[in-house]
Image 1: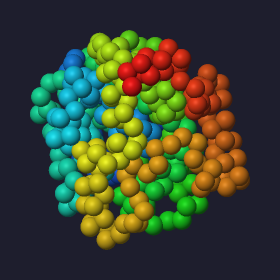
Image 2: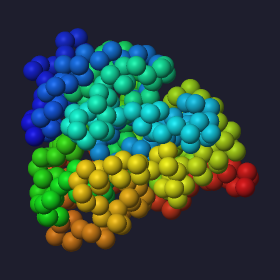
Image 3: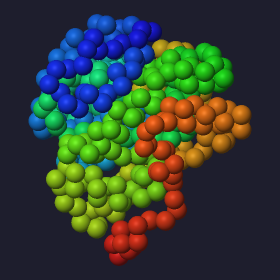
Image 4: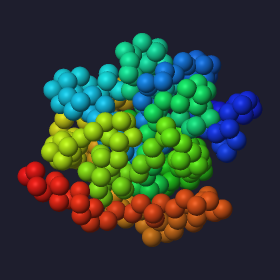
Length: 327
């Protein structure tokens, strides 16, 4: 692993003045792509979904692609999400002999417009033209305790991590993992949330009131959906539906990595539980306290709180009524 950062803030880019420029941990293969990533030519009609890992990225990607492609369910099921909405820098994570994606940057370059692109890179390591061209950007955040538990299972089964659960906690809290540290990544986008081309979402919002998030995202993308449209898409994006949808559940990827690593937990799925606030099933009270103390320290002197987005059981009444009317 290596730490990556900018040498200096981009000139004439006011947004960059508030970036933390926190060094980011990446695999050493990042060096082979760093210059091409920095100089990647962004297009005005691109749509980017960005997040820390395990924060609802796949879910958000599918929602965004469906909204921006006229709810084309047939096409979505026929073409794997990784082809429709590729992972920009995955080539920096898996070596060529894994046969995952030999050159994901080139793949994104050659996509037909409008391009849909996913990335986990922090703001300062994304292509500079992203901030000058200003295409639509959807950022999704998640409670770090839930994100961590999902990350642990992911890195154990798909990245070959052989340490203990406690080892993984230590790496996560110190930011020594792919795309770490966690909070600075979120805060840089939180500070930019009022930009007209940026929509800041949370996993908890989506779990609490997906129809409302769909409606908000459609408006952001300049699309109009009817009540029946929203109801149908909500059902398509449900966890039970996504988990058995072969175009989005990453089962092929899990099988590929199981062959490469010669290991797979038989109970592991890329889409594991699809719930919020389940960290208590795995984290001890002492571990929860460590996470909360760490988060409080990292967020001091900011106006961001994960508690603002805790899951509630109540849907927005108007949205709920419009859905009920279509059933």
